[in-house]
Each structure stands twice: as structure tokens, then as C-alpha cells.
Length: 568
Image (cartoon, rainbow, N blue to C red; front, side, top):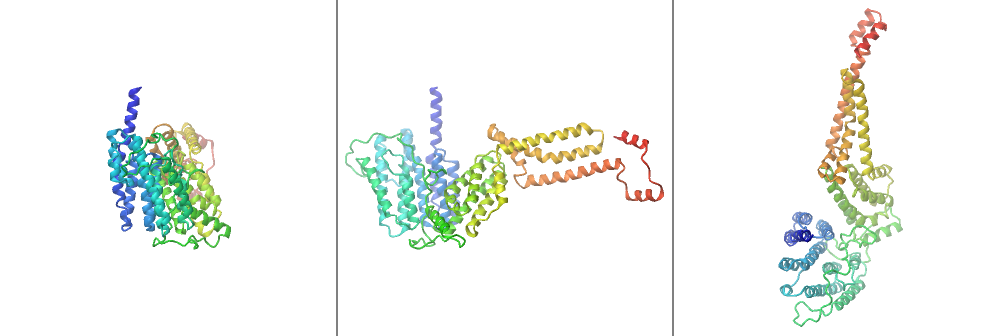
């Protein structure tokens, strides 16, 4: 038992040991993200996403998803050429990984602590004097000093936000304070919540008065620092007093960062974008920048504009870009499903679901509530259902395009699209059972045909082949769903490749189905023609003319019937 426990702990420690090295590669990629070279910046962001997905084994899933979401928002900032928004997103990415390094520093064995501490200093900007003194401190004292340093930085950032002369400056200062908070968010002394920062940032980007909220944040930070007393500045030489009770295991679970929160009613809203136009200037608070199309009445326009500002959309194109970004995730799901990777397809559909619920649903519920609800339910179902096909994801892609059109042209009732979304919600076990049952039942007519006529007449054999190719797509569909179900529930992931046999997967199965139809026509035509000729129903045209002109028509005799019986 002790040996098993030791091996388990050693395995977990081994997984976490790669986090400092993963941060080195991540930092190298992020250093190449600059607006001066958008192509290089987008490539570097893609590389950073790949590092987080594949190499950062010690990064908790909630932090990984948050960092990935902010890297995706950084891509949008590059496309918008928004320097403030880009800096804010990269700050959050570094501090989210810094949170994992911070926890890893206190959990790692003493000989493994230096790599975590040096990367934490690089990720969150710790001074060298503070880092050098950490090696000889107890964990409780080290935690208190680090927390005190981050709180001092938060206080300075909030002061800069109050003194800012433009909204972009205030936004960046608040984003930096929020990033520092994420590192120490699980402190027992904290009364702050991620939602406090997110709501204040939304007011900054929405052109509303934000200084009272910043003042409230300052009060909470000051109370936090008093609860941590005595606060020892990082460079102070005064003798520290008795530290507060140790908190290696926080008394309350850490808050989920706002950006990657899973869609639920209690989840904080995503971090809004900076309110910066083409020149990163400040939009006057009395000027509307989010214009609504003429078809909206005043109540609808006010509701849409309010929701858009709350989500950080200050311009129409930002909302439409968010729809395109969700479509991009659905497109990645279609690509994954097309090569038989159902797990990858569900992963991208889950990302699309989160983006839709967090970034789009509040706005489009006021524009086209029926279609918005259908899209949300379909994404929820497809992100967890086994045996989904590319055609299911294509229906969602088409629905998102319809939502985008509804913003500019108004909601349009499309029963055909609603019906396709309804069919997409049948994906999973019900559809798999249907096709498995159809495949099993299709074998019975083939058995009867073979039992009745097999082997005794070549033309009936040809007709049997026609039936076989007629039922072949049904058999292939049933086999594909059998592979999907066994891959998800039977512990046989290699059977997932059978999904490529489904006609709903792409071009190759579709063309294969067309070939089977051609073979059905060919074999059925040959077999039925031979049977008709045996019954004397088909003759050559010349022979028919000769028979009608030169001799009278033959009559059906008993000898003829006997000959036909012998033939069959």
C-alpha cells in the first residue's frame, strides 16, 4: 500500500515537473507577439496554444483553459491591432501560468523549488531581492511575503487606474491588478472576487463611470493587507512579527478565472475587451459606438446595446468577429470529425459552446431567441454525445451564420434549419441504435433471397448482388456507429476509425455511396433482363418483326410451361 502511494505521488510529481520547462517555451513564443508583424504574432500565438495543450502537463485544466481562451482573444486583438487589449491578454496568460508555478513552488520538494521560483519571478515580475531571500524562509513566511508583494502591486495598479488620463490606460492598469489577483486568489484573507475586477473592466470599456468601483477595490485590497499584517515590504529589513496561521491548503477553493469559466448561471462574465478604436483613443462616454441596425425597435436596440457593452463589445464588428470565432471552433470540430477523431471534435464543440454561451448568447437572445436557444441546446448535446458526424456540426455552423445575418437583417423563421438542428440533437445512442437495428434487419432479406434462389440461376444471383449493394450503405452506417459506441464506451479507441465509413463524414463515403447505387442499377438491370428473357418477355427487335410478319403468334402450351419449370 505504501509503495503504491509512493508511486502515485512520484507520478504526479513527475507530471508537474515539466511545468517550468513548458513556461520557458511559452515565454519564448509570447516574446514574438508584436503588432508590427501580425503574421509572426499569429504564428507565435498558435505555437503558444500548442505548448499549453501538449506540453504543460502540470498546469491544472481550469488554468489551461483560461490561458487558451485569453490566447484566442489575443489573436482577435492582433487582428484589430489593439495594443492595449493584446498587452492585457498576454498579462493574464503569464499570470495564469504563474498561478500554477506559485502553487508548484510550495508543493515541490526543497531541491525542486528554485526552477519554480525563477519562472514565477519572470512570469509575474518579482524583484530579484525578493527572489534571493526566499530560499531560507519557511513556507508560511515565504507565502506571506509573496502575497504581500502582489497586494502592494495591486494597490499601485489601482492607484494608476484612478489617476489614468484615458480609458485605455485605466483598462491596462486594472487588467494588471486583476492578473496579480489571479496568482493569490485562494488566500483565506481575501474578500475580493474575480467578478469585481471583471465588472469594473466592463465599465471602463463600456464608457461608464468606473472610479467608484476602483475605490471599492482599493478598500478591499487595503483590508486584505491589514488581515495579512504585519505586511513586510519585499525590500524591508525590519524584523517580521509572528506570521498568520499557515495556509498551505486554502480554506476555500480558488475562484475560477473569469475568462475560462464554464457556462453556468453563476459563472463570472468573460474579461471585456479594451475600448480602443483604430488609434487606441478613448471613446467619449456620451457617444454610442455600438450601432444597431434600422430594423430594431428602441427596446430591442437598448437591450442589445446593453448586453454588448457588458460583454466588452464596443463596436458592431467585434460582435460579428466573435460569431466568426465560434464558427472557427465549429470548423475545427468538422475537420476533426472528418478524419474520425470524435474526441477532438467534441473538444472543439465544447470550446464553441463555451464561447457561444459566454460571448454571444446574451446578445442574440434579444435578437433571435428561438434560434439562439436551438443552437445552445444543439452544442450542449453534441459536445457530449457519442457517434456525432460532420453533418451535425455543419448544421451548427449554418445556424451560426443565420444568427450573424439576423443581426443585420432581422430574425427570419427557417423551419428547415430548425429541423436540421432538431435532427442533430438526435446524435448519440438513439441514432446509433437506429442504424445498428437497420443494419441487422437488412441482412434478413439477403438471407431469404439466397435461400430461395441462390446458386440455381445466374440471373437471380445478379439480382441478389443488387440487393447486397443496395443494403451496403446501411451495413456500413451500422458498422460505423458500432465503432463509435465501442470507442467511447467499450475502451477500444482504435474502433473510432470505423466512423469514416459513415456517409455523414465527408466526400469519400458520399462517392462510395454513389458507386454502390451504380452497381445496384447495373446488377439489377442485368438480372431482371435475364429473367424477363427467360419468360420470353424480351426479344430482339428484328426477331419480333420477323415473327409478327412471317408466322402467326405462338400460343402458350403445356410443353412450354414444362420447359420453363425445368429452367427454374
